Length: 267
Image 1: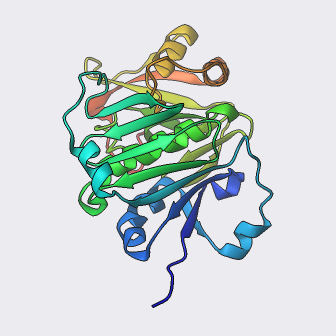
Image 2 (image 1 turned 180 degrees about the vertical axis):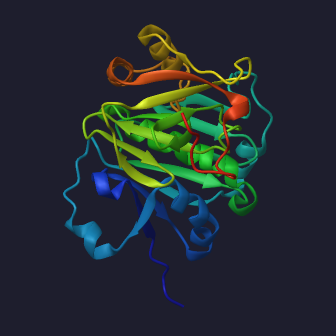
């Protein structure tokens, strides 16, 4: 019997992010692969990994494993009443943040540490929740770079910001420094005429422009960044910059076709 070597996946390889998922066994990899693929994680071989010059401040490695018995009890335990995010909760223990998605998984992390850990239960049957957890991981990992994430879907003109469930937990990440948008369809350049859509069920066959202030407020309230203490300065700066050049459009929800039918609406 040979030792199983860990398997590595890198997020946003094209943009050279030092954000990695380390998977401890092949069976777990098979269970996580559909989610990793859709989110923009690419498998990276050991030789290429060795050639990367890591930065302690930027490198984040999430060690993914099946939850141990002790961790499983915490994952399945009753909420302590501090939840403000439904099944998700964050607490601080001994200098580390503990993020739990009840019944699915738990992550222990610190922005001062390059190595984070996450234990999961039945990832193959909890794909949406696992996608949420990995989206939180990416959001926290890239916050110092000013990368911001939103629940939503990409369209030809830009992207639609949606509630997590309405987007089927799909996310969009915006990198202002590299003028790039990371989507389920791949990395796309950000153009000066970027449009950000907000769906409205009261509009009928018409669109409405959002003010810059209204767009900024909308974006700040709908990021994938989870925290009890609000958005950090780096993220607020990026959101302000996005709202300054993007066009916010309120779009009738009845005219919007979801991804399952078409790839984008016509504006």
